[in-house]
Length: 407
View 1 (tube, rainbow, N blue to C red):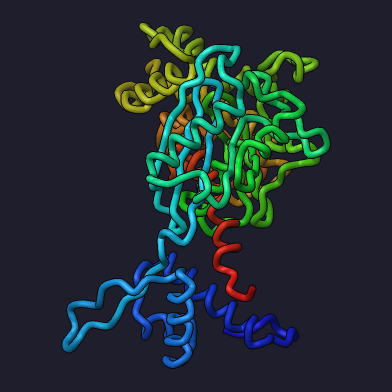
View 2 (spheres, one colour):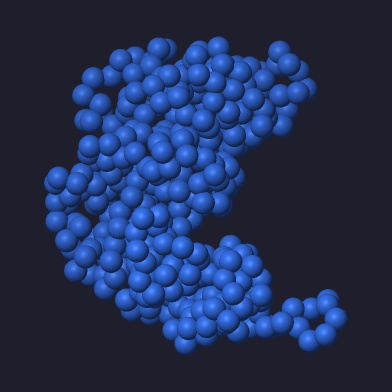
């Protein structure tokens, strides 16, 4: 591996670059032999041997099993040491805190869910966060001190100027102006905060439907309607962190809502949020409508409609999907017209519940409403995408720090 063109590389820098290249290959491919690492990196056998010995001495690589299925003795295999570092993620909703710890290879080793019912938290937020983290750490057989970094995903975004949470009035207890300082004092590791939908996009780009895509929009519908914008391979957060808060977007077919910061909702949320689906179902005569939280009811209705839509093309199940697809495409058309993304990912339990039938209908409607025609796909990370994105974000920084052998 060479240094940057035009930049003289010191032996230490070149060794560090080769070390990182080898570690990334081991993360991507799993256990590899010295010969295979040499071929993939372009290093000679002696240089590859020195590299592996150096990484093994640093505790970053372990010598594991041997190759099988070939004549002669098997070659020694090497793998990233899972215990080289750990990172944690936290997904915050009004109903619960979901925490997990992953080793440096990305494998989840501990997980804990802390219910937080009620509009007024009985336990202070700092205590909630530490209890959830401690539960995941304990499940992993670790201590807080073993966690290298924590990423917390919340609705809305913390304003970089004031440190206060914005765009998330429905999250009780998280709006104190001193909350970030209190959390920093209570936790022994660096903590980062990110919008929950942005983290779902991180998960999709690293592991799911948006891999290898530099420009895409993720539309999320779960406990709220939101979007994540990835432009040129980077999350676009906006001046106050509010980029993608499309629930406030004024759209045709919904009343114009003024002072949306006070009401906590806007046109697109009213038109196509989870709470709109049960009302549509009733209008179409789909009884009984499932009771319970609107997110669960909406997901159940759309899943049932997707399953039965083919029975009668003009029946109420197909009409529910078609009407809801038009509502979704109405808001998406504005995003697509401004951003011209390569891809749109539909994510969150409400959208994924509609499956391929809903996706195809939204695609068709969007092609009628917008000049740009991005491809629409369903999210590929279906198990806790926000939490997975928090872990991936924490692991990326952790690997940069732990794998830096130039120091």
